[in-house]
Image 1 (cartoon, one colour):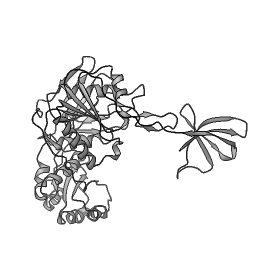
Image 2 (cartoon, rainbow, N blue to C red):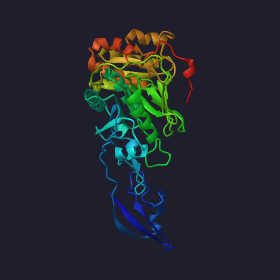
Image 3 (cartoon, one colour):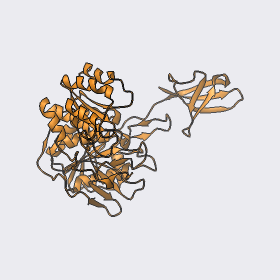
Image 4 (cartoon, rainbow, N blue to C red):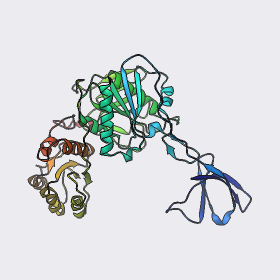
Length: 418
């Protein structure tokens, strides 16, 4: 609960603002208030002569998504799951709240090219997404296609959007149209927001694209000239705050949208064509993604057995290596029936367990090399594979490309394009 207060200092100065509640890290001798201009200011308690309570301040309440304007054209379903794209900054408390309705975004768009149906699936920040949430979203996407959607747009928080995009890529073996995940790095009420253009591009993808793949639709550059359409299994968030934070890794964007020309340009020569609906909503939650680091204690791997993990993706160094001292722990996992796979923490390039002795040792234990698959994509694929195939089939499934997550060779021209 927030309180608006007036601080009277020992020299007669008066400051009015919202009293910031203390945390375990706060200095107990300092009183902090958020001023009307949004800045925080702190004063030593010894200087505060009086604190006058002016009443409670409540954060803005969330608004339910409103219906889209009625227009003719291809039917596109828009599924709201939360994130910055449906949030705004509350300059009273300083927090970001999921308070905007989808209708507000439609007003900013200034018009639609498709008949958009809106449904709120959940209202979560992306760090709160889980494999169970992927199942929920997959079920809603499937229902949208069953009800005649040409394409589906999923509004999502950006921090884990690439995980969900990969999940939809594996969940939908075949679909009538695209599944376009879209978000915003900056909330819709800010002048520098990227929400409106990203959403416009995502709707264009859902309504027009000839492919039926899961994609992430976000700014390609810091400006507004072009929006990139990244394959859901090939994309990664590469910056905390830039508008062009999302980049295709070991691949080029499947398409690009140019707002001035209202042009959707398809770049990929090969893609999944639109077809009948075939999908699953099952994902296994007992999966771990572990990053190797120098000096890593073997116990960090062994403890995974105690929590019942069924599959582990290790981010190894270089071609896919871990320290020699971890080999017994890796073998212990595999002997216990856990599927262990290896990706590279270098992001670009691909694993190769045949080059050095350490890689061959891992191979001989049964570690599955994942070629140029991204670690996050590998984690999602492990979750999908364990939920939909027999355990003995999973290693072969991991090595088999289903949604362009593995390429025959790495293209050196795509390295360092950020």
